Length: 193
Image 1 (cartoon, rainbow, N blue to C red):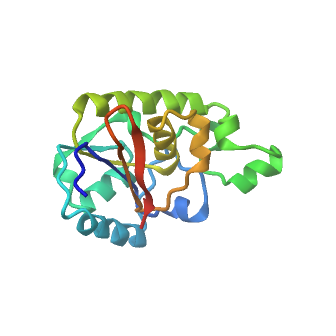
Image 2: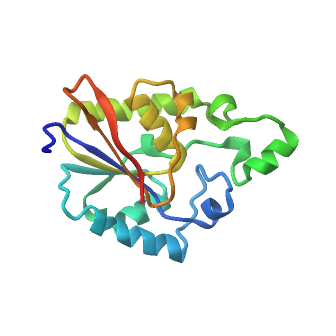
Image 3: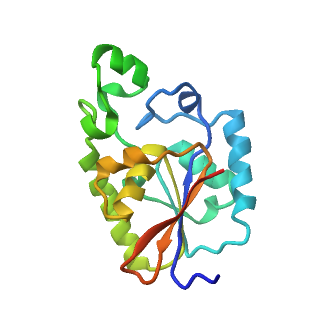
């Protein structure tokens, strides 16, 4: 079936030491592991038959390196709004460690002290969606898990907190698109590995 509407491809960055250990990695600039680099090199071949009008990346080195190793680095435009969730006081620690001092905490519901709430991330996602709609073209995006989960929720018109219902593995590829017309945004594929 031919797709008459533009598709937006989302790539989560490759594995880092912190993504491997479950540490919240927002603004810390953690490099890819060797496995993360190898997986990033496999993203390009998975997209070999696709053509993109633009390539956008988060400013983080993990997203930019994934983009580069995928073969798209030369044309990438860094967009600050694609940055991962700012975890503030929870940067670099695991959910298990947070729960030990704050039982019942949930990132998407409760946000982070000295960091962002879901609505803050949602506002950034909304600005990216506005740019995507204005471009009305196939675009490839490299970013991080929690931001992309909020982006997926907002694409569908859901609350930013509904990003909690989506999951993304490292080096995964997801596709946003439309069904019958540009007024019907859908998720065409999610968390493809």
